[in-house]
Image (cartoon, rainbow, N blue to C red; front, side, top):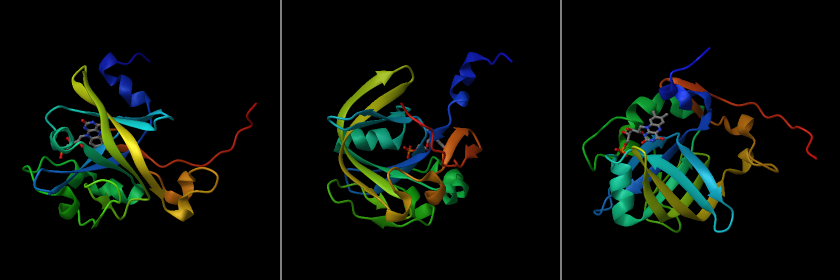
Length: 179
Ligand SMILES: Cc1cc2nc3c(=O)[nH]c(=O)nc-3n(C[C@H](O)[C@H](O)[C@H](O)COP(=O)(O)O)c2cc1C
């Protein structure tokens, strides 16, 4: 079946992360991002792709820091709140009934209910198409013990993946032979 090219991204199943930032006055903001990726091992770089009007980008542009919160399937039912266009400085973390906890290296908080966290400092930002590709240097990484054996166990942590719109997925762990 041929798809219209605007639907190209619906063929990727992507981690759904929630990015936390703070305003100049230190008020928190959270938004889901499924356009995201690791980029480099050394330095460790992680990128998110944001529409330019998002409060997330406004805050990162000002304060140069963000936290990538990896979330489980329980966040699926919170997406409609987390993605809502609240006025600037209304915290989606509070609106969604989630808990802010301090990060160790950066000012934006972590979301306690997430299962892993990347604390990032802005490394680069550039306009790409109709989005801004925001690259952060990862300065601190934590993951809940039960979620990580030799690698992330997505079954144990019930990793939330995004396809498009209201369509999400939860993965199953498989081990395949490598060369
Ligand atoms: C599952 C999901 C994934 C999303 N992924 C992205 C994304 O990768 N990039 C983007 O710009 N917006 C994405 N959005 C939309 C933003 O999260 C939404 O517009 C949000 O209100 C932006 O918040 P902010 O203005 O507080 O930054 C996504 C929304 C959902 C529900």
